Structures are given as structure tokens and as C-alpha cells.
Image 1 (tube, rainbow, N blue to C red):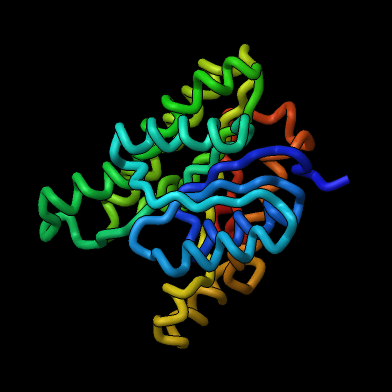
Image 2: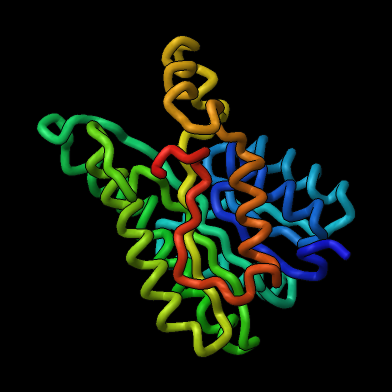
Length: 248
């Protein structure tokens, strides 16, 4: 029996990187997958075909989770199309790094909207259908930066720390309805973005991690499979670090 058989999951920002890895792992575990993308249209369409080839129902939506009305419509559309929504994964996120003294207001507001407000938008919209079915798993993607901070990322760190407080509060509010809410905090994960960095710099980061390697998107995806499945049925309000021991 596959761990997510007959469950429907929605993953935001899934056209590449960690989101894409989660979508593929979920399909491998039997879940029907709805996902969003914004600018990466071709990658989004390719992912839809790749997921469908695994024998599950899959549909990509071009939608901006940081827009309240779009997020509300998205949840309604997914429930109408798939019949239910069992797992929500808030993965969409961006960075706009700069030192505080050089950071402008737009860079602060944009990060808060895309990274933090999007979680409020989608969770608020999904709460009613999940309460009606008396169950669900919400997984919000935070970061080790939200736990320890990082110079040059005051906006990003604040948004990711906000996600932790939001996650714990949602867990307290919705637990009595059978809805669980947890956060996953990735550490240094090697994706297309890190592939563009200087190899010497990347190796120095690997050397500083107790497990002596960067994480793979699949490492994060497997934690999300666990949190979406019945294996974690008594776990809520937690932050699971997938960081190779970086913050130990």
C-alpha cells in the first residue's frame, strides 16, 4: 500500500526545485497532485505530464498564492476538480537579499507577501473544506534561516520565522477538527539555484554540515511524505529540520 494512496495534495510553487521533488514523490506514493506555478509555464506543463504518466490525477494551476482572491479561487477550483483536498503544502517562496541598511521597502513587502501572506491566504481558504471532512494535513515550508537568522536576509528570515508562529497557532486552532499543521525547515539544499554558485564556496558550506553534504530536494520531499501520511497522525505544531545537523 502506498503511503498517500487516494489522497489529494496541493503544492504551491512546484514547477522546480523542492516543490517539484515533493510533487513527484507524492505521485510515487499514490497521491493525486494539484500544484501551482507562476512564471515557469513550460516547466509547469511538463510537470503535469510527468505526474500524469505515474498514473495519478494531476493538474497544474497558474496562480499567485500571495493574492488573497486568487488563493481562495484556487482552493475552490481544486476541491471542485478533485473532490477533496487532504494535504496542503505551502512551498512557494522567493528571496530578495540585501543588508538591512540597503534594503528598500519594496524588498521587505514583497517577501512578506510571497512567503508569509501566501500561507495565510491558502490556509484560510482550505480550513473550511478540511473542517467539513474532519481531517487534513497542512505543511508550511519555513527555513533554518527562520530559526537562526542570517545576515543579509532580514526580510526572508522574518517571513520564515513568521511561518513558524503561524503554523503553531493553526495547529492549536484546528487540532480539534482533526487537522494537523506542521512546518519543514530545510537547511542547505542543492538545487538549480545553488548550481550557479562557486564550487569552492559550496564545498565550504558542505564541510560545515555534520553530515558533510548538502541536502537533496528529495530529502525535503520525504519529510513532506511523512507529514502528509497517517504515519504522522499524532504530530502537529512541529518544525522538522531537514538540515543535515546544521542547527544541532
